[in-house]
Amino acid sequence: MKKAFALILALAMVFAVTACKPQVMDGDGMVNEAEPCTLEVFAAASMTETLTELQKVWNEKYEPDIELVFTFDSSGTLKTQIEEGAVCDVFISAAQKQMNQLEELGLIDTQSRIDLLENKCTLVVPEGNPAGIESYEDLGTDKLTKIALGNSDVPVGQYSEEILTYMGIWDELNSAQKITFGDNVKTVTKTVAEMGADCGIVYGTDAAAAGLEVVAYPPEGSHSPIIYPAAILANTEHPEQANRFLTFLQSEDAKAVFEAAGFAIAH
Image 1 (cartoon, rainbow, N blue to C red):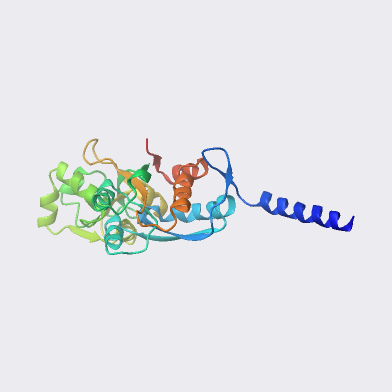
Image 2 (image 1 turned 120 degrees about the vertical axis):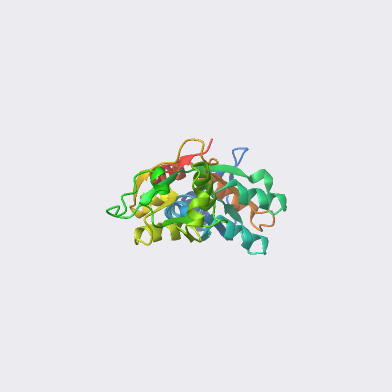
């Protein structure tokens, strides 16, 4: 009788532990659990706040045994690091260009690639707007002394160059040395916030996170669509766990965080 009671008690404890662990249904409706591991996630700097917030949701509600380690920087810098052999399981870029280049080199799992988010470019000014910049047209006038932009390997810099070329003032601003370049969107945002420039072009999400005043949006059709693609690296040692993370980024919980920050869900 004692042995039977002990067996029942042991089984009850097993079921209790199993019930407390997050369980994920696979395509056949069967419960499965991923092995504990650490996922190295390289992501565009403009995702710093949202992914940091989602990391808590991931570990508290979805996968407590899968640690996320983020590296945030410009998509161009991250792409170069991946090409040079940096350990990375998932890459999220702020533009298609960098992801396309990695795909051409066979460095990502093409089947895993998704378009995750959309963003907007904004013209922002520091507190008080000392230079009185109110539109993109003002950038071609004497109101502007200095504008902060991302450099040429940073997606926000590439979008900015497209906008200013469309406006017909890119060459003029360059020749007049009115541009100060930043190595990622956070650097550009900081430069404007600290009044190191009269204005800057950053993503809407970064403007909101930094509390910068948005004075204008670029003309329609003046730049490529701002799409954030995500993909698993071809050489990842944790494909199942990485796939779970990509699935999580498309969940209702993740969408709520992204939309609250100003991102739009890509379609």
